Amino acid sequence: MSRETARLAQLEATVDDLQRELERLRKERRLPMRQTHRCSACGGTRLFHIKTVSDMHHAATVPLSLQKEISAWWGLRKSLGVLEAFVCRFCMLVEWHASSLDGITADGSTVLEVEGTPDADTPESGPYR
Ligand SMILES: [Zn+2]
Image (cartoon, rainbow, N blue to C red):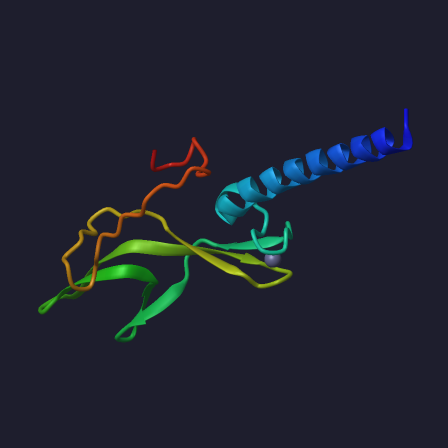
């Protein structure tokens, strides 16, 4: 093997390694901490899963949520879209998730429905396919 052929083979192997690493990083970056139990920013694997984040409504403790149904007579009737959080214990990145979207509808003012355009490198098995 000539010196130039060996150099070319080394470069090809390096490019292959970089492509595999890039693909792995692309996939991992898109997956939420809730699914991977791994921080999407620093790769840390020690997380807190905060199943209920407390909020206050008048003098009562209620779960933090996206919306609250409030009655003029009875006060808080229901918390909609209760939030949970995953927190990386190393870099403190916080990732929020709604435990459900039941009861939440787009009203055009406080809740807007936004739809993106899928790009070519979106994972095939995403939840919105
Ligand atoms: Zn982290």
